[in-house]
Length: 355
Image 1: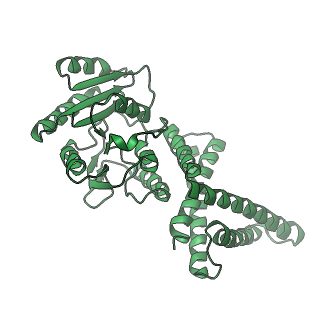
Image 2: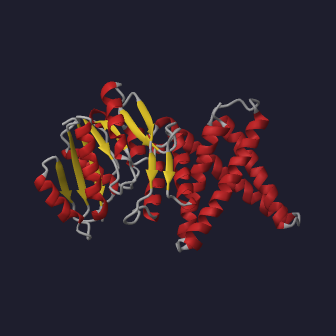
């Protein structure tokens, strides 16, 4: 086989036949000896039975049946395990990814010695059709958080190809639905290329993304930080500086309000800026190893902007999860703190202290 395309499914009966036929046409037109591996998580809509019928007629369509809804990443890994090709591809079953791009992506790996090719929504020529503002904001936010690990513009894409050898000896976390970022962080490769795609929102069925997947994503991001020697040291120092800043904030707030009789709102504003200033100096010198005098004013302004943005994000996530999604407010705040803290670290790493 030249190429193995792995497609996870859950309730995709209305889409999967169209996708299989489209892929087979692309294989035949471009003379690709390809196989299609579909991993179905016990879909109650009859997707699995339909796939069994198709696979009996076409030996290049292979089906893995799993006992329950076990998740996209683990489905991809199950497909990789039985693949017969040296090049692996992953795409969604909902027709959101253009099968027309298969040949171009495969040619880059075959002819230009690229190790990973990504169908990108965010490079020039790429686009998203049919998403509302909420999903676009979530996607952009997740992509921004990934910037600390990679400069790839769309590391959250679900449409990509990779040489199988790049995965030898690495362990992938099967939780969550954003497996590409983990591959970028952990795989052994030399060259990545992004090609533009038009991502079209599904017509039939429902999106599988939910709050659980967001939590998995944040947890995975944290694990990437701690598995990266250089980043983990900076992250720990950044966390300790943040803890010191919290004590300074509370001490100033209490002192000015209780001891000096200053109105607590004014005390809170003063304590915020004093704590932020302390955090800036300590992070500049200790976390990011910069001279205290180097671009101090411009970097201080950037640091304050990132801190304020993190605070706004905290409040926005707290409100959205609690009021719009009905999540218990304490759980919402934990998620919000995770978002804002990681945003604070990443924002300062890639902007404030980037040079």
